[in-house]
Length: 350
Ligand SMILES: [Zn+2]
Image (cartoon, rainbow, N blue to C red; front, side, top):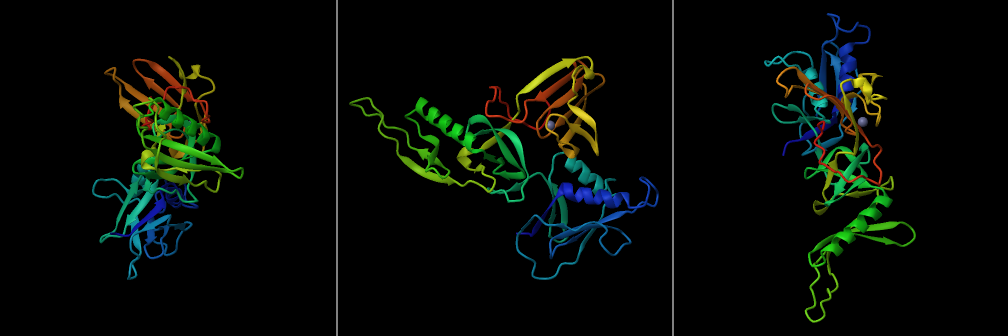
């Protein structure tokens, strides 16, 4: 196994952009610094510096996840120009921006020979670390829901988001799992079971065998638990549910739609444009790389269809040659009373 060092891509980009602009150099000037990325494989530190400067010009970024064997011998510093075009004409800085625009969260160095720098969307784990960023989401869990919850930014377990729920939502999930089992008592059931001893809610995931119907009396026999797994409340008082039988799926929030020929028919606008670094979602407050853009040749056969949407709440404004402007404003923040239409959220506009 190769040693892998995982850094926060957005933090790294922020530092790189600061060095790229330079402290006293006007933006776009010819003598703007050509920043380099420098990475210490031994200590897990990352910083940026102009190519002729020996010392770090940026703050030093610490590794978030370091996997694989610790190197036995001292590694030389890994150095990479951010702005020198590679044979394809792309430079690393632009590649990092594009990766962030695509929703990727991690800058990863494989300490192979030669080392390989790349970006990834999610780190695989069943337990989000304490410093994880939790963002609100509408989620189905184990085929039930949707419910309001939170997902750990940049983490996944077997391809599913790492999700957690508030106590009152856990109670609702327990009731819903009971109701599902009652509708089909002969089949094995996945239940969320609660115990409250007065000093806090204890929750368990339980797999119950299907009831065997008593032939003489027509009554189902008692269900037998075949497995129980406790859910441990986290430091914020939320219940993380990460289990292969209880996969979480992020679904699109209910949307308030409006459409017309003029973007400004919708008021207030979904996206304000006064945030540093671009648009800001007025529904959930997201900005920066959480606001995504897409331009596609129009299905009308001429012109261009465009969309701008929010990766956090899914609100969007789109223009299609054939239908004009359409605005979708998410019902936000997620609440326990969720209207019925739930669709898998693929990150794109609808
Ligand atoms: Zn939003």
